[in-house]
Length: 324
Ligand SMILES: [Zn+2]
Image 1 (cartoon, helix red, strand yellow):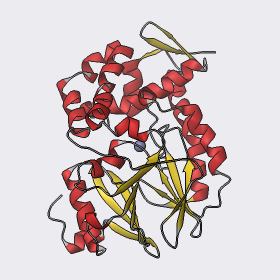
Image 2 (spheres, rainbow, N blue to C red):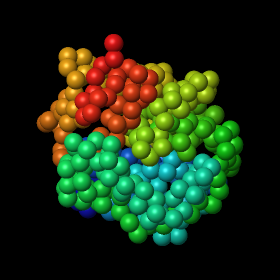
Image 3 (cartoon, protein in one colour):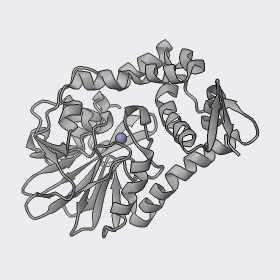
Image 4 (tube, protein in one colour):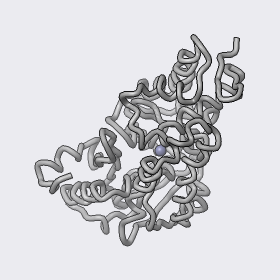
């Protein structure tokens, strides 16, 4: 983005409650990522946003607008180890204390190895869908992955969290709510007094992608709702998009899996399809920007494999059929 002037930065910073702020970062295209600042004795940031220069600039400007700088942050809590949540901190100097769910250190502690694993995605897809190989491994696609998962960062987790753990920030307390599925190391954070739930990517307006090839699990995602629906929550603060009511959040989670399954089943209802057919029908040619096919298809792959496992569809050679 251009120079983030005062007027402009106001558009990215939204008050959520007394001393609670949302800073929206321009991730890419129409997608944005949120970080949340909680002012207490421990100045706390939830998620650090993506690693790209335009995001870091807005993060700095947003903090400055609120009277702080990056070095003032005492504590960073990560909802889950995805690049658009951890990336900012991985590229900023002198990180604060960083808390994340168990085993996050093993995943991101060696940052470039973490990137290497994500860079395997187009190759994994190419081996599972040979007819799309040329698209997944095209220079356009590989360049996109290189840009989306930049190397050269580093991030150390100073404490690993467990479910139900309470983190005291001073006057306030955040409770850790383990919500696996979108990532198996995903937590939501509950601010009890205010009945606010920082949902990470577990609850999103449009629902998150589930990337089986990186360990995400549809079944765990569905199970997590049993834990979350017990909570006393008014408002959900997602890591992408605008806040919404708890009712809406529960509904979004409940609908996600069936919505994806129905979409694929509908496409297969008139005739068998190849992966290319599925891709075109699923995204529509107009929206299918070629360099993003790989990352988008990881989500379709998750539900193709889920339907195969549940024997709702079957595969013969390169074709997928609806089971009757
Ligand atoms: Zn995510």
